[in-house]
Image: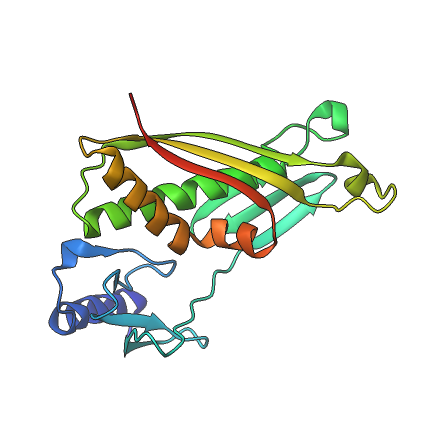
Length: 207
């Protein structure tokens, strides 16, 4: 069976087995494998061997997904392939790089805002909170001594600020409810919190 035929068969099967409308599903890392944000609904799971099978996400059973990125570096620049998208990270010329892309730390902060936007969009739909968009003010602080190997300074971000200005017709109470749930489910923010990084994470209604 060809790849196109297999994907079509999977899509048809998913329309029969999923209990929510197809419009409520988002694309995971593997194309043509729809999933739902509702834990009670059946989903198409991606197995470690690359196959797909039906599964039901349950509260007391792990349901793992794996994200794969391939990279190739030369000098300070590094090209990354994520699914069908390519990203280059680099350093400024003054730091010895060729300035072909953003530096890795800036990319890390961009991942935080991107994951926050994605999670907020999903949660807002679940809770029927109207969401027009979000403007982010993000910053990360670290001690340069850690990177340079000077003394015992830690080689990681020590503080991260993310202020989200939410464009919505909902009141501030709804925005705060959105913020709590987004922070609870945000994969990238979860990594920062687990690492013990001091996070200034605030949502407010845009004026």
